[in-house]
Image (cartoon, rainbow, N blue to C red):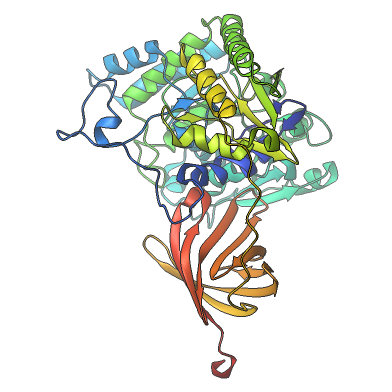
Length: 543
């Protein structure tokens, strides 16, 4: 999820919001990091596959040519979230041995979740995003099958509007919009009050510091919404599960969680908790029932596994887990601090989302000869692979962060040894080679064709050139965005990016070569992987 990225997460002296995590991390930088610095490579190098195919055991991923990794980064979906608890795995295995009626199963699970969480009712979904979709459907259609079978075409529906505060717009509100609702965005208390009307079905709030204060806090929004009999849905995907639930106590009607994050349940499961009638209606609007949400199926195995994760959450020794994480970070810090010029600091967050301590390792990149970004790439590309939140470079100071949240016993030693080896043996810095003079003048308009995996599109580049430096604009299918780049000899590199108001971000990095009035190469699109491109200088004589 974000984007996740989720709520505030302290990294040394800096606090990152969930929105900032979306921007910097899961959605954009990780795929490029996996592919290294060359955009032409579509996927990371695979391990040799076993001749006899899939093999169950410690090398199950290597048997099909996939390289597993140590997760020192956090509960990001792109690196498979968390590891399920042993008790969850056992529950899933036991559930798989029998047939049940899913409506009966979900009714029993709903009652048990109510006992465990102190909410009125509960439901297991196929991930938090699915819980958001089912909750929205419940608020729009209320379990009415005449309406259900027509979603997401809401023509004729009595309620089809969802209010979202500006601070809560994010990539995951696509799960709300998937129902077909019209979003009414508000930025002030006055706008909020004016937004309520007879067609208002729900208010959606993204949990986090911005929703904890001010006239658009969850408590303030819920107070007004409850007066108008409008449900409030809180997206608390990456938060710890509070009992009794903090959001429901603040007046929210429904709250959704990811199952495969701190709860360490199935990665493909989520929770919806709250008002009994709406949670039960959300189940009506979910699979296995037919209609638009049939694709969001949750099986008996995930449902029982998710319930077991909640059973374990209320039993786990969370203080002992925190102490263990701190011990791992202190061990890593002690190891790498032996290197002259390397300093470390540990920060501890009190936020509900991604509640974990974090270690920041800092050094002078000119002195040690390696940047934070290069170290993060080295840790991910080489064996044993280690995924981190990424490296940072500010002037001469380089840094990297380690998150122990999803690490396992013994992995802290591997991380410490590998970081120490990389920093202590990094090559001394060399003077950068002077840039080659441009071999072409590429200023002007270029007609750009992009070949995606199964389609193509025509864009336009408007380039200005000053020496080796390029700037201008990139006109896409719908939106124009600024670009910047370089040309050295015939080698060209152009980057553009923009962020939609709801949080979706597109980042394009073109690399290739120029040949007269033509150029072509590879395109790195971050989380959307890669494509190829070609461009021709616009011929104004032909219009």
